[in-house]
Amino acid sequence: MLTVPELRDAEPGVFTRAAAKWQTLAQQVASRGDDLAKHVSVLDQWAGPAGEAAKQDLGDQRKRLADAAQRLGQFPPVLSRVGGSLTNIQNQLRTAMGTARDNSLVIEPDGAVFTADKAPPSATPRPMPGPSPQLDMPDPKQLAASLTTTIQSLLRQATAADEEAAAALRGLTAEASGLAPAADDSTLLAGATAVPTNASPADVKKWWDSLTPQQQESLLFMHGDTIGSLDGIPAQVRDRANRALLAEEKANLVEQRDRHPSDALNGKIHGLEAIEHRLTVTPSAEHPQPFLLKVSTDGTGRAIVAMGNPDTAANVATYVPGTGAALAKINGDLDRSDRMAMSALKAGSPSTSVITWLGYEAPHNIVPDAAEDKWADNGKGALNRFQDGLRATHSGSPSHNTVIGHSYGTTLVGHAARDGSLNANEVVFVASPGVGVTHAKDLHLTGVTDVSQHVHSTVARHDPIQLAAGIHGPSPTGLSFGGTTFKSDPGAAGPWYELGWNAAVHSQYWDPGNAALVNMGNVIAGKPTF
Image 1 (cartoon, rainbow, N blue to C red):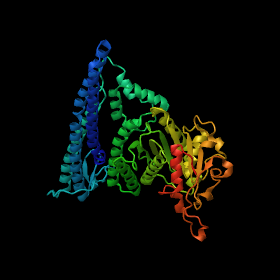
Image 2: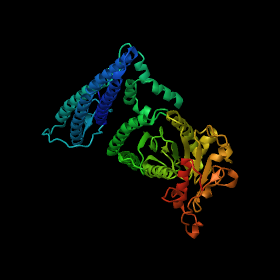
Image 3: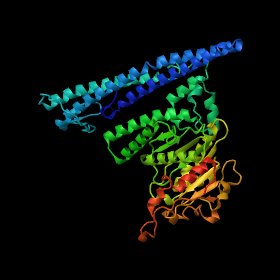
Image 4: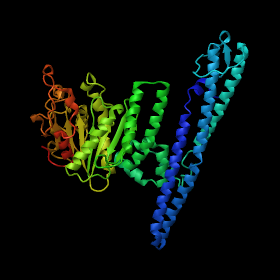
């Protein structure tokens, strides 16, 4: 049976969110069935045994999807009812605990209520705030007995509701939901649950393509958080999974903030809302269609957002921000990606995707974090894998891929290219404190022979990042480093007592009209810089 602390701390909202998620899945499965119906109609003129077999197979799949959608639609009411029931029971518990508090009574985890002088050592007076009923029971012992009856009854009701939810959730498997096509297809469940999280992105892509539509839909529901962040899964699929996850993560954070307000929670919620807003912007030249490739609230938060479809774009760029980058501050990074996409368009790119890659824990501050290599070393593997994934999921001719780092982000990019083989045609270092090598030829880009010809760097005249040269290696803009240095606007000079350095310049490379922004667009589009 549930205990008082368990019921007190329960979050009934999880059932309401699960109900909404199942309802969405039912609608998506029904939509896949409609899509198959269109394919069946196209085959009407295909005669002969092969044509009949194909039409029969598609027809069978359509029926299974329709049956699955109908069965899935039965679960949301059950989950909503459980969530509502637990909310009501929890509110009654709040009232009872408030009464106990007001009358100096203590409550055992099993719901037994005692007067203070009779309380056993294990009793806890941790009541929840809430209104107290006006009970005409002046005798503390009688009141304790009455509250014991009330609270233990509530615990039994909550336990029954919890068991009902457990029974419903046990039924939410691919087979019970109608997602298994038939008893003779014994590979479905194994295929739908064995997510190859340790496989290479190329192998992940092959695995995903081998699944039936039913298996894919089952995975999107059962393992959406994993599918959404798995390199090798197509961008459109990851986007679907992560949009649902975004709503869940935000709801969880809001519930946590309501119980324990904090600046950290407010910041993460603000970041999720910034992503939400960008996902709803009508696509245009200034704001390409966004794809949410990852979202997480772990640590300072993670997010990967593509402006334009990286699986179809001719030119794909990955932007890696630096020190201080976090989910709470992602709005500015999203704007930078939009501006780079527009710059590439102006440079002649026929189709472009620019990706904000906040896929690592960036240094939290300049001193002492930004002087340490560990942040780059911890993130380089994820960046290399992500770039491999872009290659694996791209359709048509290979895209022209660029990786752009800013500030400490250049250090991460450098370490990824130094210690592995970064799957990109070009790298761009903007305002770098060093990239872990002394010469461009020490970097490794997959399939690129003369790497120095594909390394591009810039730094503004008044950017104080130049004072950090040597911390992570020499500046890539130095003549001895090799590669190409392109122009950036100098920025406004700082005051004389700061020797002309101006910290604001460090963030101005993406300002409209800045030569650095123009040149980044040129690199992305495969055009010369100046």
